[in-house]
Image (tube, rainbow, N blue to C red):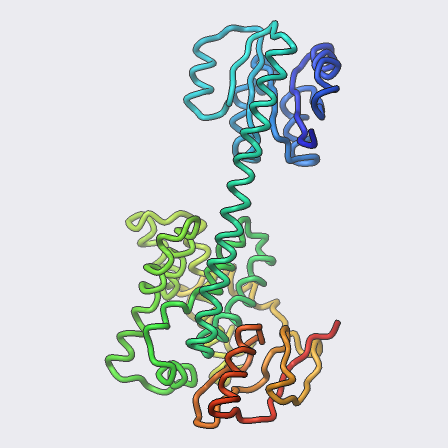
Length: 381
């Protein structure tokens, strides 16, 4: 079996005995005490299963398995102890910290059967996670592709917001950064309720009608409703819903709306990225926009502004080319708005060319025609 098993005890002789008994059937590693076991999990993990003693000095087995659950929730946890402590067993089970509770002496056959069951459980959990992640990735990809086809300007804006958010997440060493990055890519998904022409006017600073403005103001709630029932996207939906809230308002309403720290931080990162993009696309320099935002002390989380101050545009990392629509290929980024000959916006400046985008352009080229040539950025290899 390729899966690794970690045995934890404060007595070296017991660990050596376990290794001798099980090494022919399993990949066994050992740790002398809870602290060394946690270090091994960080350094050598993941482990499919961990077998831990109960009575250990410093940190007992219950405390260790609770910490292990936080750091490696998919690892199957087994307690092996010479103390047939019923209360300890009940506590461990009720806390969800163990898969099986075994008492010493435990025969090699019983322990081996338990480890086989633990590995099977680990495989089921990881297979479900992999399936869910692939499903989630596919769902996000479909939604962003739909947005790119229906509203190129909104997709282009979301792409720029994503660049800002990804930079902030790296600067702040944010855990679970995938959630806020997905929220950035889908932050404008609620704009599908608006007419493309209305969005075009809005993004260049023109006024909307009362009805159009009302629909645009509701787009965060629309985005939330679209995503609320997608598995694992609950926090993402809440970030998107709260993307227009200022920092003070975020903190004030957090308890009432049952929002944790992750959601508040994510929503604030979206808020700062969206407002920075709005100011820059309307003519301010990056530095001028940030200086303007720093004046609104209640509006933005200061950590976001500090992180955005180190953002550098990637000019010079791509070559500029002038091409025809038929010469476009994936990974190119259009450096101008691309329109059909009837004036319809097909791609917005800054949008990446994808296979679905090329398919749409081909269809328009055949039926209506496209204004050519097109200025693009080609990433350097």
